[in-house]
Image (tube, rainbow, N blue to C red):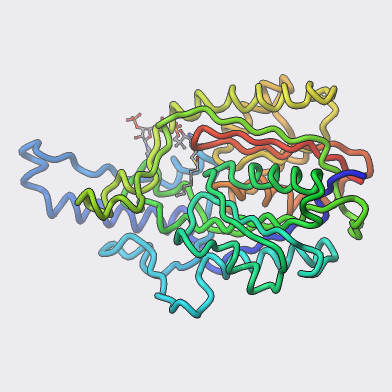
Length: 372
Ligand code: CO8
């Protein structure tokens, strides 16, 4: 028997923000800031806020739009962060709500019910609280017996979570695993930072992992191999955490939100990701040219083009390496799973593909899949 991915679910928020809307809001905020601080800026005691541009965003990143869980407040130049309603302890939490929606879609795609699952992993870039785990809340809401836990691995949370799931099924300690990625990134986006205000979107994805012996899906994939690696870097960082209360720092300061040295990340991560994919494939005796599909992490279109160029010696076609970044932006760990969810139905039995994530940590994770 083999370990299979038997179903994938994608939940997309109803609200979105186009580059134009985002830039109009940011620029109005920046102009107001510059006006209010005119004297200090003229005296060179403070730097003027530079303006953003939709043309720059699309060219530098490939992003045209992003989804947002709660649009209220995010574009309000007197607020510049989304408004989420406070939920009581006995109400379903925001992140669990997203996770449940994606999980239900994955279960029905896999032709499974709660009774077929005994392990729930919620794996994403942030969880809205430390305990009880979001995974345990989701487990209870879906009526799953067994256990659940949360994992944080930034952009590689989905692939690292999938590796845990594959290992558990392989070892026989789990019969069916739900790996869920409720990527609620918007609360951590600094909408007042020109360099990063455009990068992220909200989404939730979920995947069912089980044994081929129990699989009832007609569009399942054998997981041939998984490979994860981390290498410490401060080039992508968020310093928000539970210690902030004790350090008397401003909990909303820019270093508490997502920030990065984007150019360095680009330069360092592209070769790492390309080498990782190549060596993973070679360890399985697979040549790069044998791959039908690359479900790559969706951070930046130019990164993906560079990676495919390094591996193929040419640009990958959209059919080979589908892009969802234009519509969804960077959704932290969910990007490669969105690509997989939207672009796997057309593959034939025996076709090979690779899911690969790369990002903060640095962290890189890949799974080699073969259509059953
Ligand atoms: N509008 C106009 N001009 C701009 C803007 C803007 N919005 N932003 C920057 N510029 C300017 C710059 O200031 C710069 O000006 P100058 O030349 O005078 O210094 C010029 O445009 C060019 O800027 P860059 O060289 O920085 O532009 P790049 O072509 O490098 O593009 C990118 C910038 C898009 C950030 C690019 O470097 C990139 O994508 N790098 C890779 C980043 C990446 O993949 N990061 C991964 C982060 S995601 C992750 O790891 C998960 C974290 C967890 C989730 C977090 C959720 C919140």
